[in-house]
Amino acid sequence: MPHGSHPGAHRPPLALHGVPLDIGAGRRGASLGPAALRLAGLAGHLTELGHRVADMGDARIDDGTALLIPAPALADAAARHETVMAYARCISDRAQGSLAGGALPVFLGGDHSLSMGSVAGVARHCAATGRPLFVLWFDAHADFNTPDISPSGNPHGMSLALLCGEPQFSGVISPSWHAPVEAGHVTILGARSIDRDERRLLAERGVEVADMRMIDETGIAGPLRRVLERVGEAHGHLHVSFDLDVMDPSLAPGVGTPVPGGLTYREAHLAMEMLHDSGLVGSLDLVELNPMLDLAGRSADLLVDLTGSLFGRRIVDRPARP
Image 1: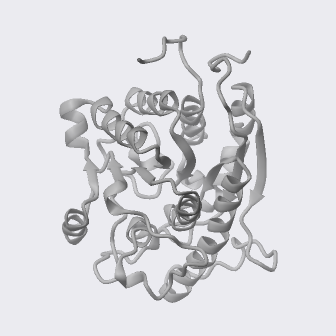
Image 2: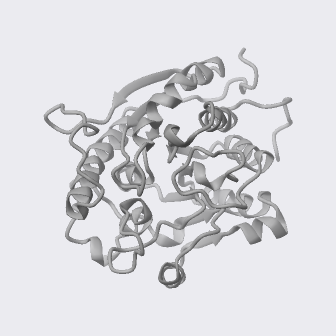
């Protein structure tokens, strides 16, 4: 039995979906993230932990053209949003298809705007199966801006707002690929850079924010345990969206929007280990790895390492919690 595996535990196959997207961010380079994660041995690492792993390749538009190729210039806001929406429709179908087939989808980013599609597809599946969806958003930022309040205009800072159905996105979302996420079922963990109007909107919508001050004061286990208890009591589906910039930049330099004072190595591993032990994670995003800004692959290696902890790697076997 592979080290760290649970005897007799149900292990759905893992479906890896590459999303070479960086047009939603303010800097190019995150489109190389899926290749960097593959090169860092993500699939092999998960296989060694006893998982069945299938790499489903990279997201492509309907005619088979790689979406990476025609990406417009960052200055063209309308074209950027159009490209992100093209990704969202494609990725949503991938998410729903993987879940309907009994697999656990893992989306390899790519910037965080890819979650507009991945979480929307998970929400469609949950609506069809009658399970409540909960979203755990590891991020230095809240990503709850809308076009009228966003200081940068970057789509990756609007992902959660679109997913929760903010009215300004009514013209670009469609039931054919999007189902709304209940704002009260969203928890942002590790935030330390939130815009003024975004902060107001989060409070109005009831999004839970466990910021770095809370983690400094209480540790990461407390707020995370409360999330897991809520999901478990509701028999919910937990989607984890892990933005690498939640980590302190000294540990993960390969991100486009670094913010000092992030999670430590052990805080992040503890969170991943607790998520694994809960057995509640049903889908996952790994986003904002930018190899152009990395140092000798450190950030990619860290992300693979953390993913291993999420999927069962452990230091020693521990008795199950009552």
